[in-house]
Image (cartoon, rainbow, N blue to C red; front, side):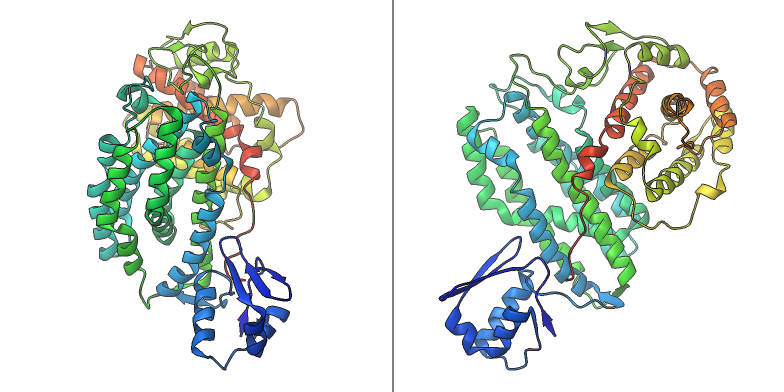
Length: 515
């Protein structure tokens, strides 16, 4: 049985029949449709059992299948080849949505300010840098030797590209390599990287799908070159994208998308549940990627001064040149150099670092989000324990990890984009036990204060004894100046994620990839 997918629209007049999906528009003569009654039934009733295939009808149906007009059969399991075919349709729809974003028009016409332009340029640097990191994780975490070898080779071909091709080296942009390397990633740029990296740990198929999506962008090579030339002209940065175009030429030569696609051309099967779960995880990565375009627009601040997302360095908080600090109560440059974690935190509170509007969202989140938040935090306690190198750290994280009821073996996978981004970020710091403990202190202080003024239940899997243990541990350590900076930056980035629920909710939508 052939069925049209739910997202296919049909327009018909006396001459033409139009079939339109999110990516393609197919126009067929009405006379041809009438001459093929089984196809006519497909158009009129959205389903038909086609048996009489002429050569031309077979070609039309093949195109419609590959272009995502026809529904795929729902089965108990799928071969990897079938997974690839289904995913190809989804990837086309994702790219259609991605390139319809308003950012591209603003860049093409030169409407975006220099701050916004730099936000986009540096976002691409971060995406390039993440490729090598993610491939490295996959090179040791993939379940099969073929996949491990592919990602090992890919990693060695990709890791140096961020330095060779994606620094912003143009005299009219007035930034140097250090500005680019230290630029704090946009929240969704970081969320995209961390989602891709973490999926290696629990969903190899999702990681392969994410990589396949990224590598498939090379098919837009010619359009990209034309676009870059227009941007160069409008911003007077001729030659800026020469290195980007050189990088695309390498990608064409390597053809990683085709190579990865060949690895998916297999009769090996995975269950429907696993495939659907992997699709949802890959979709989260795509949603983070498109959300990063919104964040680039937020950096679009007309200003004679470049407002870069600079990390805190040497304890200096300067709101006049750092867009990250705009939301905090800092009127002029301020120095924060307390080596005592507790005193450091109180000084940051004087600058309103603990006043986070999004904390209330943690108390009203869905049951699925609450379970996932608790579970992922407990996982992070175990991870921090595994990286502890001091006696006090072992005892602290061991005590925090004593919450087995929040450590289920599986999740419903219905948690939100927002809670995914937040927990991935928190988990990423569990490899640095001292900074992680400071961040946990921040989270407990913020939520504890909000909890005291409401009838809500605790949102963190940390008891009063756990909070006391964190405070006791922090009172025993002295931070280095480098750790002071890391603690400040961790809170700033975490606050961004906590405040991002409304932004990510805009991209919560069901995935229509079978029917």
